[in-house]
Length: 139
Image 1 (cartoon, helix red, strand yellow):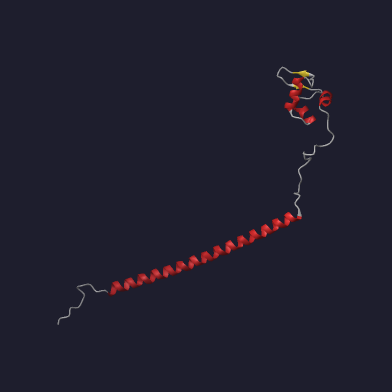
Image 2 (tube, helix red, strand yellow):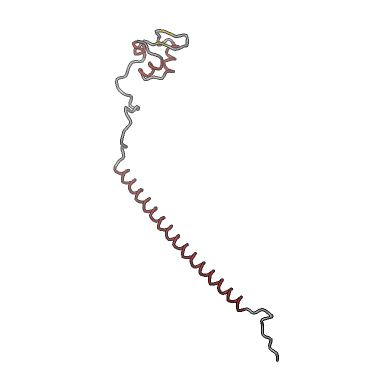
């Protein structure tokens, strides 16, 4: 059974470019070379040049951790930040409610003032006598 260049790269943990360079330099021999330029590599030849390592490299993770590794100090800090943000949100909501109440109170005062102003204007207009309605005093 022969391996393609990509299969061989996966098996030995190298890139396909590295294997291709090794073939071109003569370091790695191929069993067959197709007309389209693909290689058939014998696994024994592959592992002669690039030996299999039995252990995982130190910088490579075997699997993604399901839980984060947070220290108790980090957890405490994040909990404090969360509590602080919750207090800030509660304070802002209280301020918004207070502002809304103040705005409603001022709107009511304005409407009452406009109503009173309009009534006083109506009274002045109705009490004001026109020149022909005025009584003339003869001395």
